[in-house]
Length: 206
Image (cartoon, rainbow, N blue to C red; front, side):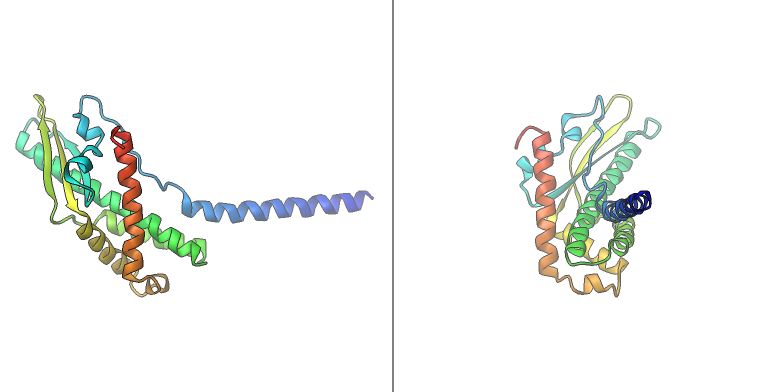
């Protein structure tokens, strides 16, 4: 009787371990899906709540914000803050493409570990992607020389630039070979809408 009980206990422990490992592989891919900006004290309201710009400029844009202080040189601070705002847009695109790719690849039955490796490459590539065609829509320079800048990028251009970067990073990958442009753009539009709604809600206008 004791031997049977011990055997059952071992089998139960092995089953729990197997389920735990499976859920870990899946959660590795699904973690850190949401973007969160830290609020900056003494910054303009629009810097902490960039969702206000969607009401002003429409929904066909992506907005990024940046700040910098370069040795009390306002011009240099503004340039650095503008560069940081462009990086902010690249990071937003990176997160949205990552979410889109994960959902598509996992729902298509691809191995979670393989998807994780691919998403890491996508994140690295798109985060470093140069943002071209952006436009400054708001800036503020404080008395101590800190510059705050908001830039916007045409949504279509951002989505297509991100697609080129993604396909370049995963050239020849079977997963991307099965992802058509129309489907990619539809999925990205859904990701952007979620991001915009979250930022507008945070700004109290949604």
